[in-house]
Image (cartoon, rainbow, N blue to C red):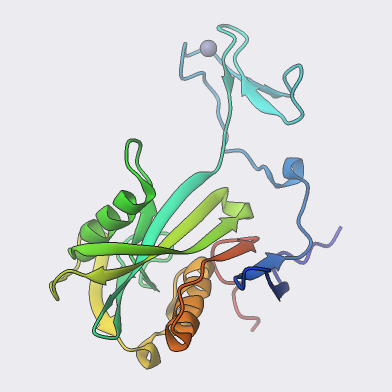
Length: 221
Ligand code: ZN
């Protein structure tokens, strides 16, 4: 079966004026769920097997020794678009995936923090910059990566920044200077585009998107 993953998207305006973008050809959850392989139970150390538990509808890793069902659910990535005097703070990634490509500060949400706290923390870790987090900008479901990306608008509290351990370089760029071909993730491209459109229009909408995969498709050679 051929499967045109993420090749086409459709956009339409929601009733509230927010833009909705949906990937076509979504698969049922059981076809998408390439669960991370698990061999041993983290509760008791015995071997697990993969099967659909009674009353469930998806295969899970199940431990028959202690009865634990190991559910695997999407992770939340949180970030922000930090602005200072019309320019946007971008980070060049020092780690895989997408080492050497540019992104806005973002990373996995930690237990015990809010989305906004996570966005500010990631900005401090990756760009050594302190920000005030503003309105919600985008929520992007990345089906194939089992992730939900949440981005906020933000402003630098002072023009102080630099590369944290996960960044090679950090810089403020004008919209014209954004290296679109070298942006690491599709969710970042979507978010930056909506950000700039909103800023030009003097509004702060929030946007939803569904992507099949996190990284842009390689260009056909
Ligand atoms: Zn167990």
